[in-house]
Length: 314
Image 1 (spheres, rainbow, N blue to C red):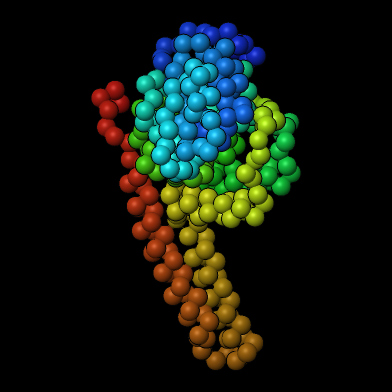
Image 2: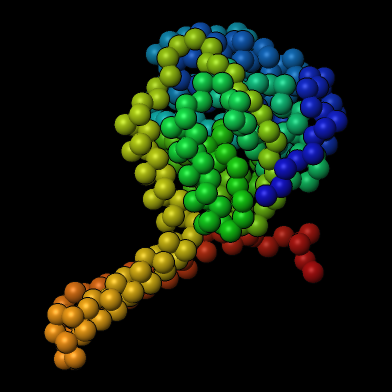
């Protein structure tokens, strides 16, 4: 894990000069109540950046308000999901670096210079990792995010922080390599972080604090989040490191098969060589799971083969 050193830029809202152009992409759905303020606050930090608001078929005046505030607005004719809006924004952005933010006002623009300073320092992606002091963050949600971070760290074999944070700056040419992996609904932050780490790109972290939501209602529900959390786990396991999950399961089944045989040999039918059906089933099942995991691992590896570049020669 790399934490970006931004001591010199922390709390600085002046617009520094960067060796790249920046596009700010904001997915929005029914955020007319606060989108103008979000755009205006970003503009004070990045007066010359392109600000792209992707309106995911809102039922209110989100598109009109965002455009009036000075944003470039792209509107989906149907509601396709938060991740789909992010992908549309990335594809249509003109900047060399894409800065992703939410439209609800929880992401404080004062941390933008810190994120971009990390990109200027050589990172391919810099994530705004929320601190424990994040306002409005429930204990259950923190535990869930921590568990997800631990699983992600295990899968990509390096420590990761705040996998669910949507506040991040990414080199556009890099994220375009993996844009088809990003889901149309939720978990695009998780997928993008793990994809870049798996492919060997440099990912840094900047501590940020979130603000309270600006009006409106959050769509977060405990049951819905629980189901979504489970689906995210299944997705990242299958995408990034299947064998690191399937192999321990297969080995556990083989241990259980051995225990079943030993119980039969020493207890239920002493010193009579007989392999119980449970041991056979567990052993055969472990072989199947291992082979399935091995095949899935090979498929996953093909997804993250970096294209050859002349500047990487030698």
